[in-house]
Length: 385
Ligand code: PLP
Image 1: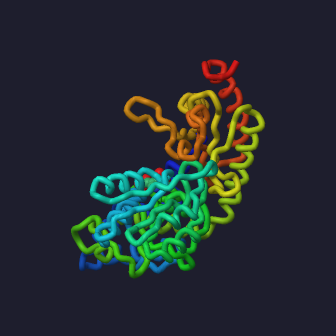
Image 2: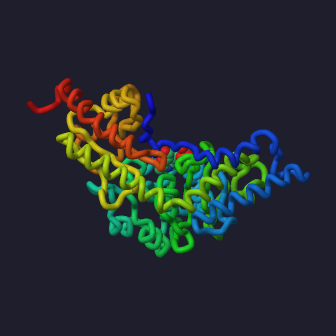
């Protein structure tokens, strides 16, 4: 059975061109970029090139790019590194809909005497800018708000937010793991101080990412050791990973508009057909202000996990907002923050597409879903009689 992959916000297929670029650095070209000899030194040039490719996509200077092990490390470093660098300020502002790589770090800091403000969101998944403005004070060290939400795709007004935060003198970090490669972004025109990206979300390899650190931003290194990454991140570089990330950034820069127009058309076709053919469905998030590849749909009265398992039997991979914690199925913290009722939050499915999806795959999925939903509703005790 063919696999139809609609889980690209979890991870993406690596682009063949990226893989080709990485291959020699696993075997023939295995030198350490920090070595004095030519064999290692030549790797340093390749890393410098990858830094340029990443900077080109983000619209920043290569010297502002710090390679990390991925989105989680970039988020941790941005937040903890800022707290260490400014120990006199004790307030952190974030939102209730962040990825755990941000939320867990903020919440852990609470145990160490920081006060954490988690801004709520409205039914569209959006924060209130007036509330943010009201919360930022002289004690605020960092504001960390994601660029786009991984579950709903909702895009935050990061230009406005970063301008506001800067005007109040705090550091602004954004987790742009889901945004980079899907929507254009230009750091040269923004007030963002710190920004996280992850290569495996843009058809690059897993286990490598970037933390953008605006020139002049005070940041204590989170990981100590050698002098790699200009002293901002110690540890021998993940050479093939960094080279793959660079290539993925180059391809994203070249194709972002074309690919995402195609993806958006497919996403819209899928969503429209589901809403037409399945009663009691709703799209979660701000329909007009979303990533082009993401559709989060709630199917009332049935469990997301049951839908996923049945779709899986038909070769369709998607994802549910629920996380299985301590044996109980908790609905997504993002949908709960948006006030989505329990019955709908439990039955939510995220379809996240990529450039590799096709019209045929959409047609097949559109035919497959209604009977799956009907069957599960026949079995559900929650459907009103
Ligand atoms: N932030 C967001 C918004 C994400 O969606 C993810 C991954 O799903 C991460 C951070 C973590 O990135 P990584 O898997 O590279 O650690």
